[in-house]
Length: 344
Ligand code: DCP
Ligand code: MG
Ligand code: MN
Image (cartoon, rainbow, N blue to C red; front, side, top):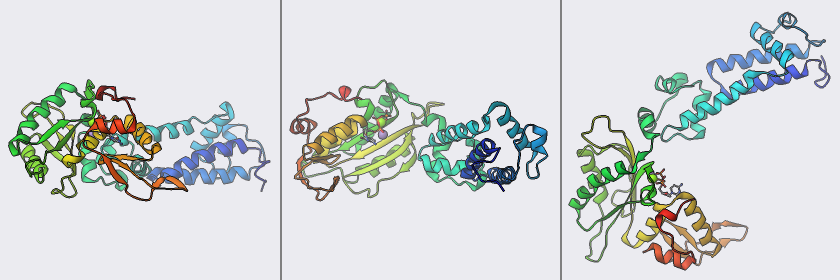
């Protein structure tokens, strides 16, 4: 047995080890035996006393199979092993594909990859025992639609179907599109709708969102639910789902979000929900620097932070502003920016 350092075939062992580790990390059916077969070859090579010169010589070593011998030959001839690059890019490519499914992040994508899935059809077939959640199933079913952005006009058309239905429930509702649409973008990833209602007559929008959702299902505008509000009777609620233009053959599924907030929080909600996300991060940072805390509910002052970690807040603070975007900008000393200017 040779010491690791002075093994005459160390470069080969290194490459095969790299490949073995890549297969091990994946744990698919065939990855498992591949990793095992490489581990056998690697052990054999460690004990082999001479520099291997040819394919035939490699093939003659007990424990080295035909495919591994081919790889050894490639390393001898080129100093490299293409399969390593392939295994690496393959997992990036496949996990990216899987992360295109609504509700799938990096860790789930990699879990499925490790189970041996490589294509959307593998997922559909439940290869490797993979099981999708109901939401992921919907994401998979409408994969192409949901990875497409809709023209601004389509977001407008869908909203114009929704708005009168909402106003038929309560004519005093405030209902508008936020997100990329409000920023004036030519295309939208989804439709973000803010709902609230003035309280000057003593009424609120309590219960409106569940009622609206039911009507939108009945009108075949909303087609699938992805996430329902936690407490439908709360003035503050979030809904995520899919919608389409009804009665138009081949109309695509589109993402739709509803956010309902108390009337007094509308400014902070408008600001948050209009974005974009980079602008939001910047203005929240600015608030933090000034000793405030900004979120979708409002701008809060008298924030006490943990001196050991300034990110940790020790109290909820005192509400300073939340009714209009303008006052939040003003208190933070940020010059007013129109929605279309709030971009990265
Ligand atoms: N938002 C945020 N941080 C996030 C997600 C969202 O601040 N992580 C805010 C800013 C966004 C708004 O919510 O503008 C709406 O979220 P969307 O994901 O719908 O993003 P956009 O509407 O801006 O873009 P898209 O056209 O892709 O929907
Ligand atoms: Mg959006
Ligand atoms: Mn959204």
